[in-house]
Image 1 (cartoon, rainbow, N blue to C red):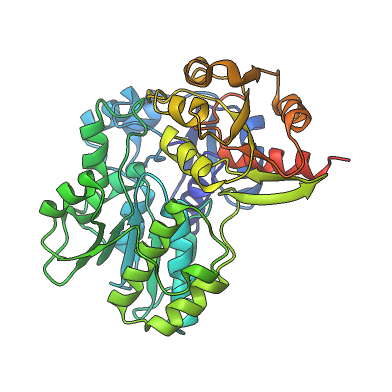
Image 2: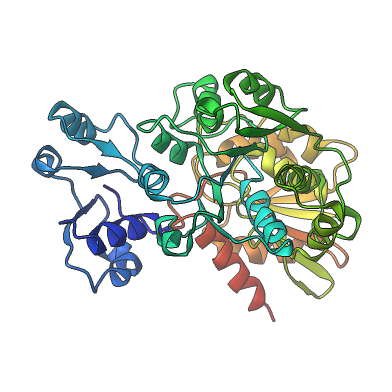
Length: 425
């Protein structure tokens, strides 16, 4: 249920079809919006129901695998549950089929991807067999042929994906929580419910498991009561081995490196190896990614900043005069904290260009007179931002919002920004 365009749905459909299941894929989006995913599955005997769902398909299925973006209160899932049909997710299947007990799960509101990929680099530097998957635009199931009993499996896990652990009541052997801040309040009834969903990563840990937790984040500290495993705290302000030579910047990346380095030490990777790997780590696309310098202006792509806190972290990491491109879809979040950063006496923000979206009015209210306007599309927004930027300054795409509507997802938004910046002449 829910093919999507991020790769997870494709991976699930392929895995099941190649293992002999009769697969029906149903998605509310029409075929033209799913073209890339459908092309990836063209070689398989799969039935498609697109542009709609049919309740009969849900009642008659032997198993339903729901996409993480589909909420549990979907009436179609409720109909299936009433008919006694099991409902699972990709992570349910992965944890069932994975031959290795050495699963490292990484979750948090922000920092998941950087921490996950850095952990993969640390394992690589120490010569340990490993795979990296999860919430990374690739299916975890597709990595199973490469996993052995000795492999380390590093999974980036969103709160939605963690719901897939509920049927198994199983948590990763090593759990890392980077931080918890308000997010996805359009999906969860409250912030407490959202935080509890993050806690699934440690809820079913055993005494021989381990949780690496952010000691400076109160919601994470509260979740420490939920694990039966050993707790190892990391200090997000500490200088980890290799940090001074790293290609990363900003306090949030210092915290990400601290989380990954602490987990690496739990595994047994020595400090010297950690330092060399951190110094060599190139960073992650779409996360404070410098696209280019053009006419003295640096263009930075931070499209994965989909919360106010992530936007503030980006602004805090950039120490040049900044034209901010922000705005998008409202997730029920509070942008009032943006006011002091944008309008305060020490602000590096010289002006703000807004993208269309349901959260844009909130951002405009917080940014006040520094708002230049709201162009019709990203190309026009970039043009306005480029015109306002001065040599030595920065144009920063850090929307603080989701991307639904104008873009397929936040990565599409970042890809388009990158292409437009590279085309500047």
